[in-house]
Image (cartoon, rainbow, N blue to C red; front, top):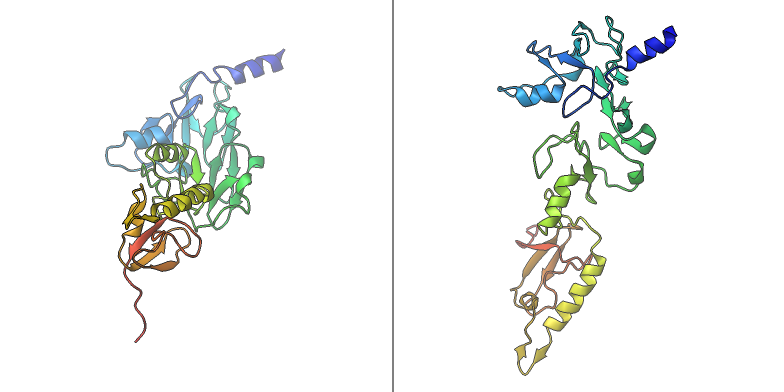
Length: 274
């Protein structure tokens, strides 16, 4: 009977308290300003001077059931309620919504969501990635420790899902989808194509070939006829980074001769050594 009462007391109010970021039965006292907030994100969003709360520096919490302030822990020392079904003493973090499958990554130094078995930590990129990307992504040192190139929010500890592009750069998944809606198919950081463009390039090759067929002394009109009218010069490929020399009247003057991509741009001629 006593055990049943203890369990009932412990589970009282589960998922009934919290903020828009987390469900928990306590608030935290920010050591930087001594004010009380539901979580560090609530703190960071409310500060006028832009200072942020160090999650590891939190020392005390206030139980939302009995309003008792106490050293941080999982169970309230006064009423016995569990203040968070998930509790990480390292991050000083509590959350009732365990469906997120939280886990602590020692290498990241913070808690992640999605289940430990579904992620691995890439030492070079400096963050946890889906196991579907193991040995299948291009590493960029500390790629997640940057701002999203679309919305400029810091990615490493963002609550929003992130996407790893073919080039290795990262952004929010939502921002990635918004970029596609605006017909942007290259990385905003390095301009590399974000998809395998093989089928598109094949269709473009056919279009370029048709556009450069001369009939009765003039160039037949086409959407891509302009490629035959560029002056002699050099192009650099945004996909393989190689340079190609192009000439007037050359079919596909925007095409890289190395990887066959049309994701190129004009550049100045290379400077040869004297």
